[in-house]
Amino acid sequence: MTRIAIVTGGIGGLGTEICRQLALAGRQVIAADLPARAERVEAFQAELADLDGAIRFEPVDVSDFASCNELIQRVEAAHGSVDVLVNAAGITRDTTLRKMDPQQWHELMRVNLDGVFNMCRNVVEGMSARGFGRIVNLSSVNGQTGQFGQTNYAAAKAGVHGFGMALARETARKGVTVNTVSPGYCDTPLVAKVPAEIRAQIIEDIPVGRLGSPGDIARAVCFLAADDAGYITGANLPVNGGYFMSF
Image 1 (cartoon, rainbow, N blue to C red):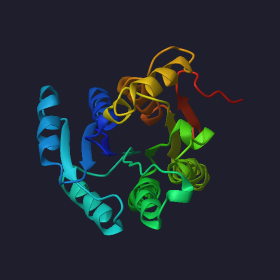
Image 2 (image 1 turned 180 degrees about the vertical axis):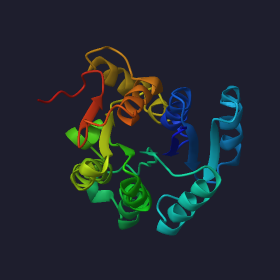
Image 3 (image 1 turned 90 degrees about the horizontal axis):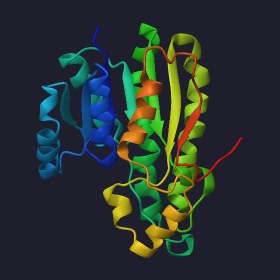
């Protein structure tokens, strides 16, 4: 039986590699992302053309509950029940709190935190009824440590793991696991925009001496999304090169 997996933020820097590795693990993957990024969708499809239809694109706005519900209905009508959900969609609206306006707070929360609720709410009932599900939510090292100019982002990403722990307790006896992956600083277009001198300092502070790769994150996601990972739930797996360590 082929498992059906949805990856939100599926055409982003991390999302593309997560889609690829899930497909290589035998999943039928739905890369869900905003439809407005037509040129990026075309590049994404070209980049993954070698996987011969194992990855499909579907439009969604994770900040809108109805859009998420419609996505699940389309996917289940075309491919079957959703077995794996990876919530990788996210945005930044960085500024210090004293300069942050309500729109910058609410825009980020609608995507980074509400989006996790919107997607999970629309799959968890079916997963529980069928007795199988894997939900992996992407948080961030900055949700664990805080970061200057990211009160909104750090709050949302900390909330992602709190949400996941609570949902894990609700679904543990129904065959549905809920886990978190917290990436550190990775070699993505977002990090590439950081000024060179700041980026160099970040790398200096990472014990392994390099930025993470999208593959580093995708491997962790695939591990938690595997059929035989059923005894791990409510966990947070940090993938940060040792940048932040805790007991």
